[in-house]
Image (cartoon, rainbow, N blue to C red; front, side, top):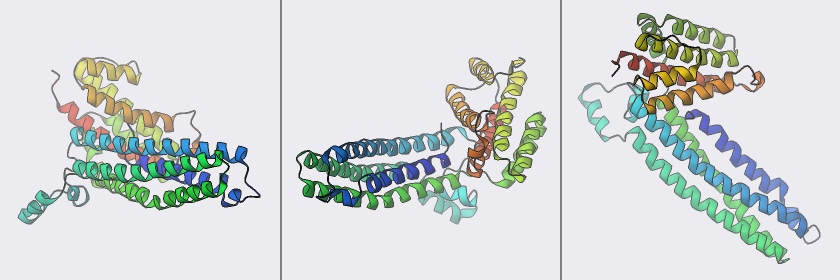
Length: 318
């Protein structure tokens, strides 16, 4: 499962790629009578139609995936913000704050409302743009370059205007990422708790994370995050089940799930975070492609997951 922050850049990048496709591969001068070539413009229009259809589906998927991430955090992360102001200002204090809390939308409800609206609005606009491009293609095939050009101009202009919807969607995702951000004070508290509950090795891995952040070794930041999750699950298996780990993360998760230490939903959540860390932090991954942004996501997700795992450690095995 992806993180909220990791969904932002791909949406913007895909939008810009499609806009560039309309501008550079099908520029305005190609519609002039002297430049018009049906056999050359037809495949480019077909590519634009396919690409915009994929973009529409990907936005719908991203909205759906964002809802899943927030819903998963809402169900499995301890002390998560239920109401919007809790994530930014901390828990409410006093009667006034409590009254305000009752009037505010829940985080998940807000995302559902905004996600549905954006999917609907952007879906309609993209559908209209695809219709304009299909109409342009039909007129290209009929050698009516003037009508084809007009349909293409409408499609291009509408897609440029749709950027406002993309910006709104991205800013909502950024806001939700901020709501779920892990505060520095809580990081210090969590490391102390790890030590107190016998997960000293995990605490040391987090200290290594901080060291690598200070020297801007972003790939190593992600690798140490992955190591901390691996070590916690191996230690949890030993503490709860009395079983030594074979130093295979998948085996540890299967054993913990099989003996009801974690349930299916928790296993999927752990696997989702671990998969991201494994991809960006693996030995084979090009270090030059790992960004501070990747490292920031890794740290946020790791601390949130470790907080959940500490709560699991407190439960009795059924």
